[in-house]
Length: 309
Image (cartoon, rainbow, N blue to C red; front, side, top):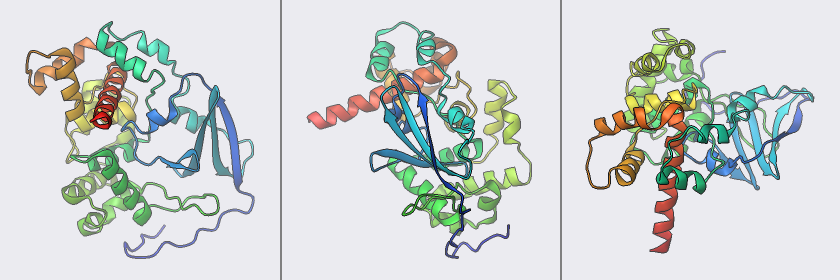
């Protein structure tokens, strides 16, 4: 496919006349869909007419929480569509009770779990996850969502969507690497533009293999991700947790650092290095899940406190 000019308008995509909306129902208990999709793991989900809509790979998707399950819709020519791609993304086979049972027994985690017992982890496509978290540096979630939306609308390929909807895939590493920094800065990336471009170029030149990272152990996988420009330990751990499914990865950002200090070290001020060492041993084999519960718990507490001011 020929590279498009960054200033070219989007062409109208003609879809197969047999393509239509197909739906399925996933029976699943205790899945907090809204909390999971807004928990800072992924940045493209929007509430539209009472449902959650996004693009996964090259598919427009709509999710609606229902009693004892989730109803999903997409566009397809195949009425008997295989939904494994969405089952994997939503991590439906994971039993959260089994995960929670591995957590250490302490008051703070107990309260965090009670705050949202159905919170889950997603498993995303590695390139999109990596690029999105590079773009997340020093930004709030709503700002990250805006940047990612601009990138997809300007440089992503259109995907089939219902009438009245416009949907775009996340642009490939090859596409991002072919753009100028000026093109990328037009998406409000700022200083992150050379980082995401440099990462895309490394992947395009095959100086790094995102697929191979899944076969490494945690430390080696983290080190491989930190070879990319703009990727420190926090971003690497986000990608390990949200794309590669390393349950021990424990991203430590400002929110989590504050949570660990307040909850576990109220009378001390350990530095970030000591807190990272603490998280590596204390939270067990599913430390990344514990991190997500604590992250959500602290954000919820702060929101409630601000509403009561």
